[in-house]
Image (cartoon, rainbow, N blue to C red; front, side, top):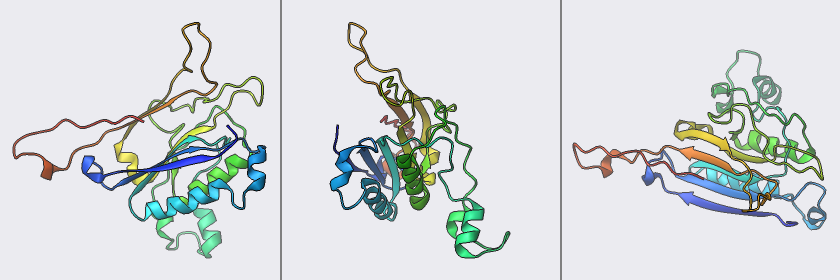
Amino acid sequence: LEECYHLWLRLDADVGLSHDLYLCLCYLPPQNSTYYQSLAEHPLDVIAREAHCAASLGDVLLAGDFNARTGCAPDWVTHDELAEIYGYLEGSPTTSSATHSRPAPRCNKDTRTNPQGKAFLHLCQECELLILNGRTPGDEDGELTCLNPNQSGASTVDYFAASPTLSVCIQQLRVLPCPATPAGKPMSDHKPLHLTLSLTPPRTSRPIGQTTPSHIPRF
């Protein structure tokens, strides 16, 4: 594919979320694609602006093939960076971003970065989203998601990234084997990502004295 696509979907909080969930499904061509030459604005800048708007309405979840190699670089703004930006001294009051607990370390079997990966990390920092790959049960080691021997080799370019407040609902992230034809030929060089969320319906929707099992949607 040589064009960028992204689609926003809203999942209502009534299904058992604390807030409405805004899910963005994305595909970005490789960074050397001629597709970008005709654009006045990079698609990641567009997605960042829309994610800012969505974050003011609820939680945000990005998912897709970003053709972004991020290595193990931080996807969140460190205290030192905030101190430099806002002129604060160590230990002084900071913005609300700095009061968030320190995110869990992120592992990645793909240790390389590329310019599109750095731009994706900047989007995560700007929109306060955390990459789920490599720090979520089921994918603690940051499995490779793309096996392409003809280009840059095996890499991680497919991601879930979410608002930190959504973490209470996230149960598991798995990188599945590439699907194959009946003859055993791979149907894609990208592995499917499987995210499981645990949702608890609001108590007001349950009859008194009745318990309802959690709904577990999978993306």
